[in-house]
Length: 301
Image (cartoon, rainbow, N blue to C red; front, side):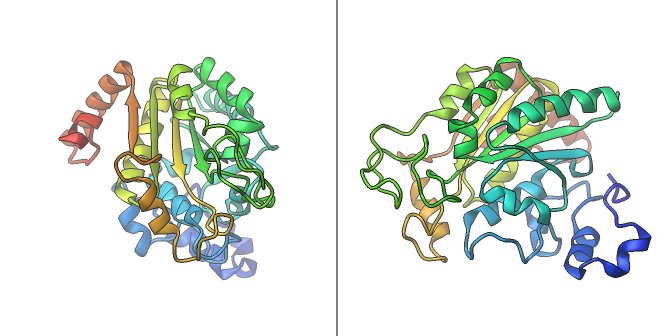
């Protein structure tokens, strides 16, 4: 791994914002053992990002960026929503797609990268909200899984449309009353993790971002499996604290409450037999090299 792919042209260094220069110089690229623990000394996102104070999505972005196993050769595909406000402030190549077509864009991108860089690992990661993933973009999400496209889909589950005033989404809880959904949600939360499993995803995880160790493992497993086996899906609870009536400092507790045993975001993980075998083989190789990758079975032990 090297920082040579992420650098500022010498001619532009003196006119670039100092925060961006800092982002390029202090990102964790080039470090084999990089991870969430480097967040305190490294830099994955510019401080002056456009998310609200205390937004759990900013935590999620930091954990994901630190967990990517191959950041220099990773391209992220985003969509319209709160996530699109942050992508210009992160140290990873990214593409902004139209609302809902992010998995279609990622499909073409992944295939093109394979042709353009044969023999070289190029990871593609989709990151979008619940509106783009399960509502407007559901068809393209599912079709990419049906085709067994080899990239990871990450959904920031706000449980509503946080970027446009608080409308309900397919992932909103039943009965929840939002600012622009005064009658309350009339049906249960769509079980997208189960749909992902039934649609051909080889690794599926649902969790909050309150525990960075777990987020890091889920993201790494998802990227590794997508690289070699097939599509993967990670659903992260990133509540919009403003739309659910919480204070800026209450986001972490909201996520912790949602992940206790029996709650709607209790940690769930599915790994296909083929993916289990691959992760076990990869873990053995990492162990021989002194790495720290663990298989799902090792994590449970």
